[in-house]
Image (cartoon, rainbow, N blue to C red; front, side, top):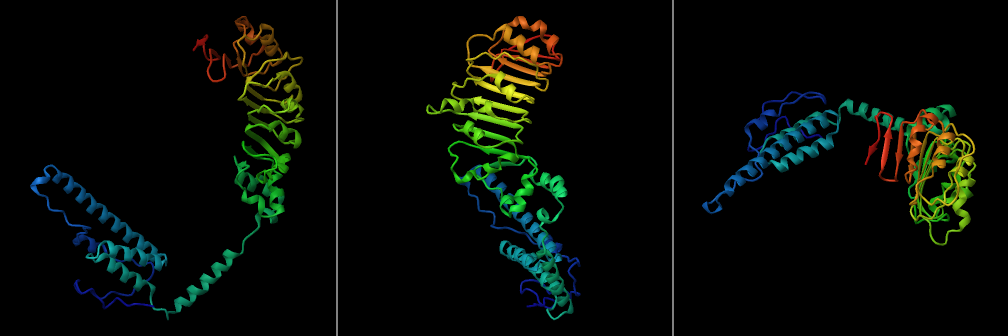
Length: 398
C-alpha cells in the first residue's frame, strides 16, 4: 500500500519542506543527513588511570569502529538508492531498514524509506497497469527457451557450442556431467566431437555405477588412470579409436594376472600420439620396441620406474617421435649399442631423457644422428645427473 511521506516528519527531526513528485530515476538528496549526524554504535568508554597504556588502544579501536560503521551505512544508502531507481523497492526498503537499525538516531534511514515509498507512487496510477503488462510479457519471453543442442544445425553445434562449453573439460568417474543426461540427442551430439579427457581413479571397480561413461570410450581423446590395478583390463575390454593421449599411473597387486601386464601392447590405435606410464611397484617389464611397433604415430613417450628384462633395440625409424623419456630401475648403465640404436632410429628427437646414465662415448655423435635435439638428460626420474641443452656451450653437472 502506498504510504505518503510528503507531509510526515519524525518527532525528533525538524519539519521537512514540501517535496515535489518523484519518478523512479529522479535523484534525491540525503547527503545532508550524514553531514550533521554522528553515527556511533557505542560511546567511547571511560578510561581510568588503572588501565595505563590501554587508553590508546581503546581510543584507536573505538574511532575505527565508528569510521567503519559510517562507511557501511553510506554504502547501504547508495545501494538502496540504486535498487529503488531500478524498481527493486522491496530490496531497497530492506537496506533502509538496516540503516535505521544500525543508526536509529540518524535521519538517513528514515529519509531513504520515505523516498522509496514516494518513488513507488499510488497503486491506482495508470503506469502500474503498463508495468504489469510489460512484466508478464518479459516472463513469457524468458520461458520460451531454445534447445540449441537439438534444434541448431549440427555443424554449428559441433564447431562452436561444444568447444565453447567443453574446452579443457575433464570427465571424472565420481562426478556427473549434467549435459549428458538432458536427452539422448544432447549426448550424441556432444560426444561426436571427440574432445573429452576422462579420469579414472582407484578404489572403484568396472562394475561400479559411476562407470557408465566407459561405453562412450570411442569418443574420448584423452584417458588418465591413477593407481589402478585394472588399467590394462580397461584398455583391452573397451574400444579407443579416438584416443590420442594416455596417462597411466599404475599400481599392481600381487594377484594381477601376468597376461594383463602386456595389455598396453595390444592397443590398436592409429592416431595414438602421447603415452605416459608411471610405475609404483617396480615390477613392470616394459619394452619400448613393442610399444612403438603398435603405436607408430607416437609423438611423445614417457615411461618411468620400469624393469628392464628384455632387449629393446629398434629395427626401423620412427620419424614422428620427438620426445622420449624412459627410466629403468637398474644399477647398470645403458649399453653403448642401445643408445646408438635409439639415436639412429629416432632421427626427429627434440628431447631425450634416459636413465640410468648411458655410456658417455655416445656424446660426440648426438647431433650426427639427431640434428633437431634440444635437450638431452641423463640419470633419473625426478633429478638429473647430467643435462645438455642446445643453448649451452657444454655440460651442466648437477
